[in-house]
Structure formats: C-alpha cells, structure tokens
Length: 459
Image (cartoon, rainbow, N blue to C red; front, side):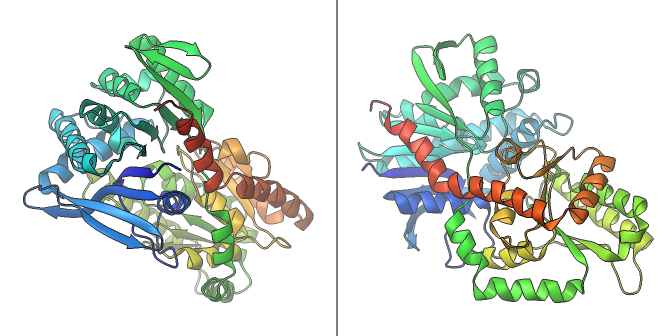
C-alpha cells in the first residue's frame, strides 16, 4: 500500500480524548491511522526568519511534520488571502471580501515554501493529498519541482457560482492551478458543478468523459465525496464516563426544561445572528413555551485578528444580551452563550441531553456537528436535528432532519415548535434514517471514496 502524505494549513496533534478539535482534524487523523504516512503543515507558531526546519512528532498513531512561518506570512497568507479574501468569497459574502495584491503575493509565497519544505519528504510511491482553500496552488508548485506522484486535492468549503468567483481578480489563474491535481474532491454535487461551470465557460476546459476535464494538456477527475465523522469512535465517546457526567450535568441544570443546542466556531458563515433572531421569534410567538426551553450556544472564538470576526463577536454578545434582557426571569435565562470549546466526549454528553440540535449555517461545505449530534443521541428517545438547507450535510440528511431556511426567522420559529412537539415514534423514525447514513458514510468511507479515485490514476 502506498503511503499517504496529507498537507493542510494547520496540523492538529491528536489527544486520547479527541480534545476540543474540529471535525476535519479528527477525520484526517482517522484517515492517517488507516494509511501509513504523515501530516504536514503549519505549526501555528511564528519565527523571525523562515528556515524550513521541520518538527516531527508521533502521537496516537499519527506522525506530524510542522514548520513555523514568519509574521508577514501569517498576515498575508492566512489572515489576509485565506481568511479575508477566499473564505468570505467562497461563502458568498462578496460584500466583506477584501482584494489586495499583497495578500495574493503572500499566499503564493507560503505555498511555494510549503512545496520546497515537503518535497524531500515525498517518496516515489507516495500519494499526496492536499486539503482545502489555503493550498489551491500547492499542486502546481509541486509539479514545478518535478513531483510526478499522484496528487489529489479536497475542498472542504463551497465552490462559489461562476458569477461570484469572477469577482476575484485571480479567479482564472487560481482555477487553472487546479489542473495540476489528478483528482479534485467536493462535498456535494452542487460545489462540483460550480467548479465545472467556471472551468468550462471561463477557461475553455473540455469534459472528455463524465467527471473528467482537460485543460492545457492535463486532465483532472472531479469526485463528490461527502465527509463523515469517525462514527464508531464518537459513539464510544458518547458512552464514556466523561460523556455521562456531562449529560447528567446538563440535565440537572436544565431543571426539567428542553434544551436546544448549537455548537459552532464563531464565524459569520454559521448564521448565529440569524439563529438568535429565529429563536427570539419563537419566544415572541409562543410565550407559553418560554420557561420550558432554553438555547445553549457554544461558539469558540477564531481568527480574532480579522476585523470581520471581531464584529460578529461584538454583535452576538449584544444580541444575546438584548434577548436575555427582554425575556429572562429570576429563575430562567433564554440563551446561555458560551465562548469556549469543549472536548469531544463532553460535547457528546451535551448533544445527548439536547431535545433539539440547531445547525443553521448560511452556507457550509459540510458541517460535521450535524452528524455528531445524531451519533450522540439515545436510540430510545432521540432529539430532533434542525438543519440549514444550505449546509452541505443537507444533501445526505434531508430524510430525517427538519430542513430550514436560516434566513427566515418565521421558518426557524415554526421548526423549533415542530421539533418540541414531535411524537417520540416520529423522532425515532427520523433518527434511524439519519443514523444509518452517519454510520454508513463515515470518515473511513469518505477516505476510501477519495483514495480509491486517486489510486486509480496512473502514477
């Protein structure tokens, strides 16, 4: 079996409990345990001068290799082009996307540095798997350095429609670099079709056969492979002592009330303001339910140095304060708003204690919280998943979840009421349909879908 070299912006060292890690980190660690190989990327630390020094670690069966970046690299590549240009644009927020030449230059410089540094680690039979929007040009940089290996790329966020992407000054150049890869993967058919549309109509690519595009003498295969969670491990975590303690703690603090839970990184794409407004609409329309329910919103801060993230945090704090001020009583607070992350097993207990899982991003490549919520439920008395129809997960979970339009406060209010009054038999039926998918199309299935396509490429 070929080794697997995973390259991404950040590298997350695994911990026995899973730590307060994102879903992608857990997914990649699970993939690396199946394949030999290593995970290469930025350490998250800075250095005065970039040297290319690699720090190797091995923990819980996963080998990591990390490098430090200069402060200017972080400002231009990460805070700049990745998170102030690409992230908002690819989540359909052209109103807050910032286009600066310095950002684009820093982005290319760091990808070149990554290519130079990882190059000596790549052996002739290795498969290279590049992850996400931070690394679009990395495949081309590796090809330019003589790498003939099979190289795949997976995009974990949406690919925007052609007219939106065209607002990016480097749109054609960036898309053209994708043809350095042998396989490019997306979570949904919608994101794949958006890429195909741009490549064909803006670059002149030709579809030689279904799912295979040719441009400038190179072919790339496009695949849809929705990512899953490490379902077996998460179910085990939900049965752990820590999860049971977390569950009991939440049930005790609920004091007989129904809990609605949201768990999201603090980001404008997650629809948190719209979620709070939808919940407020529910409180307005159903005063008889006010003291019977509460919303627990867990929102760990991220990218605090980016101004748009500072604004969303300030806005949410004000909104939560206003709603609590308007509706709270001496023995009840409608919103518990928490700005910190929790380990997986603690979250599993919280999910299990919640009557409703509220997953309502405005736009999301996938959203693994939806799948974690399902996996944590009690099969005999499961909660209800309320899921944005604009999350990538909706394509897999439309049978079982209650799909909502996060832009509509009325629709969200109605969905909350529907979920609270849903009979146990219907909740069980819906949960079984969801759990069948979460168990079948897990992270190992996702990895197999992609690596099978990559292995099928002639080296």
